[in-house]
Image 1 (tube, one colour):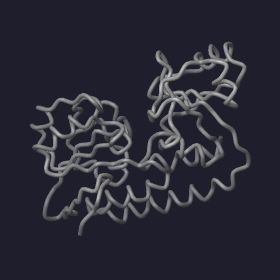
Image 2: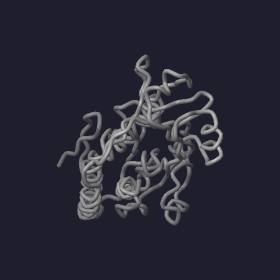
Image 3: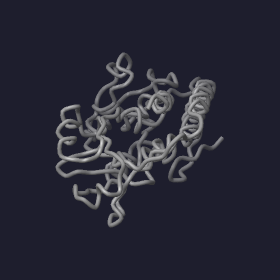
Image 4: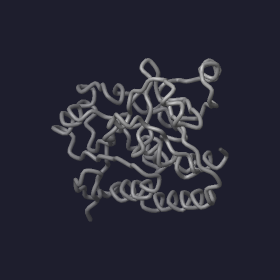
Length: 260
């Protein structure tokens, strides 16, 4: 049976009885998903940012970051499958790794409901369909509990400072926030998915409030307080993992959304 990833590459499902996979993940949220699918025992490598679930990933060797990896260490680990993401990993690095890793699985969820296909893709490739369908059921229950949108507002969602950076409307985070009626503002002059912006009266006139994400920049309540003094708009800190991590974390993320 064939399984098609985010760029149309076809992968054949393996049998865990006849062949043992050696899985390397360069995506933190995918690492968590693989573990929740019961595949931690087959993982031979991860990034330093792959920190969940802690009790399982601590046994998996680190191979660098999401964008800078130790190619020779990866070669020695001899993975059979590489998990990457279009936004998080660099194509030249992935192209290099693909010269000696047989199967490269590319992910790129843009909407929250893309998680269902992601669960089934990995569940099919690694023959853990029952676990994948269990996640699908849990996802659908959490999604249904969101209920109808009660109000709408436009927010400036910040992921970095020095320079200040936000997110475009076609990102996973924006789709996540739209489920509760939060529209993300983006600069009309930028086509980047993660645009740089400057604080000015024009920007402030177009938004109802500001959100600081706890990742990738480690915004804190101190940043909230400092920015609140400068702006005439409400500022709040949100859990970036809950809003940006797809995979199994999306289920907890949907419940987090409901609490907002």
